Amino acid sequence: MKKINIGLVRLLQFIVFAVFTFTVLVYFSAMILLPLAAVALLIKPFALFGLSTLLGALIAVPVAAYLSMSAYKIPGLITMIIETGLDLVNMGKARVEAFNEILDSVKA
Image (cartoon, rainbow, N blue to C red; front, side, top):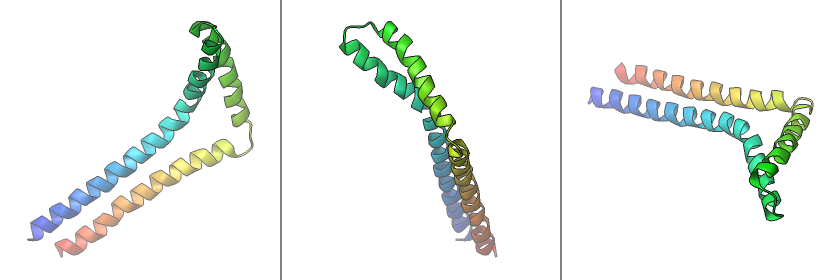
């Protein structure tokens, strides 16, 4: 029974690790993909007016770059976004390490 409890704790520890890893990857990937989504959304109205997609992309990319630069210049915004992601990492690490205490109590 002891080995089953140890295996169960290890399984739950892995599940928590996988969930937090996925959450952090999604968080930072979303920050990277936001400008690309802005470009895709800006191209569609140009296609509606009859401009080719290439011409729409040539106009939309500088607009998205300007919007990204404007967001970057907001004081403290980028620092807050990065710190929030790092807080997610630290919280996940703390939750995974909390299972080690439970594992020690199960082994004893």
